[in-house]
Image (cartoon, rainbow, N blue to C red; front, side, top):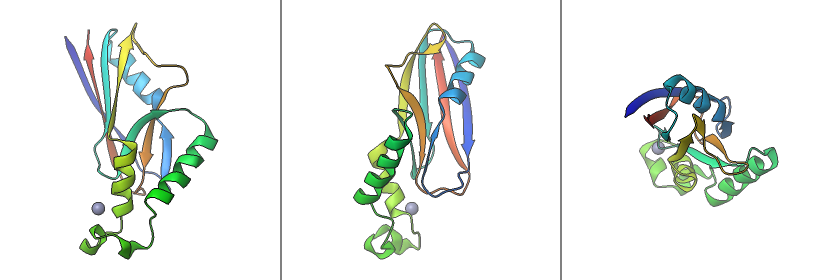
Length: 139
Ligand code: ZN
């Protein structure tokens, strides 16, 4: 069995941003040479997510509105976590809702998706450098 590990980096312009990273993950699978196996993609931060859904801008807007309703950024003082001097309690909650990682099967050297599935990086406390781990195992 082969194993291939890489990190992707992101530094978003906005606090909250959703980025399609399917192409980058796909490129790493090709680089790994692994044809049959599994691909793990996880955020290495507790204020950002990796998730699978549709590449549709209306839906991404809906995610942002929904997350802001569930865990509004303000008022900052509404969260105990922010008593530490931070202001990102909402980002921790948003990350938990949207998840930490995805695992996708690799078949014939490609991501074995269902119809419309794409991999996204969800940033909830951006404008600083963040990392995503990609681990591919198989043969
Ligand atoms: Zn925090």
